[in-house]
Each structure stands twice: as structure tokens, then as C-alpha cells.
Image 1 (cartoon, rainbow, N blue to C red):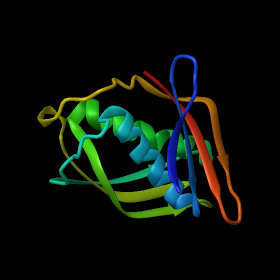
Image 2 (tube, helix red, strand yellow; image 1 turned 45 degrees about the horizontal axis):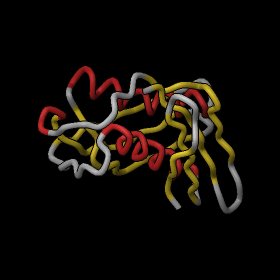
Image 3 (tube, helix red, strand yellow; image 1 turned 135 degrees about the vertical axis):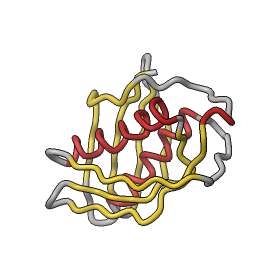
Length: 137
């Protein structure tokens, strides 16, 4: 399934559709990476383990995506792949291993200023899970 970019007046809106919620979260992060580093192959040379929590699924998604902007801005880390993704919906917590590289080795297309709650949607279904979110660029 994957992700696609939707029409939006000023920012970038993304819709992700996957069979599982876990895959939808991972595809959301990869969509964010694609906005930042459009069509650039990032080498998986560095590893980072992260644990993220939230008050509900929307805040968990927000915090998860915001972590990538934080890592980019504070440590110069840009995402390549996500491994060992585990989502605990009841505890509103996730963990995973990030593979990536130093951002100063690459030239990026877009400057994502923030993840927003504007028009954020998480819809769980039996055969399809949908996530929508807007990026402030």
C-alpha cells in the first residue's frame, strides 16, 4: 500500500494506507523522510533506538514523527530505515531501531518546520489502516 501526497493549500498533507497500524506508523515516518530528502537514498550507517509514548494514538503518532525532526535538528541524523518496530496500543507506546546517516552528507529538498495535529486522522479497519497528517513546511 504505502503513502501518497494529497492536495493542501500551503502545507504538505500525507495519507498512509497499510494492512496493519504498525506498518502505517512506519510508512508515515518514511513519508516524512521522503518530504525532507525527496528521492535521495540515505545510507543506513548509524543506529538509534527510540522509545516513544503518548496520551492517545494521535499524540503517539505526533511524538513519533516529531522525534525525526528533533534528531535531524539536534543530532544531524536523517532516517534511512526502521527495524524492529513494536507498537503497544494499550500502553500507547512504541519502540524501534532507526538506521540512518549524518545529514551533512546530503542536500535536502524541503525544510519541514513541524508536524501538526491539523487534519490528523487515524482510522483502524479490518483490512486497511489509514493515517493522515499535515506537515508545516
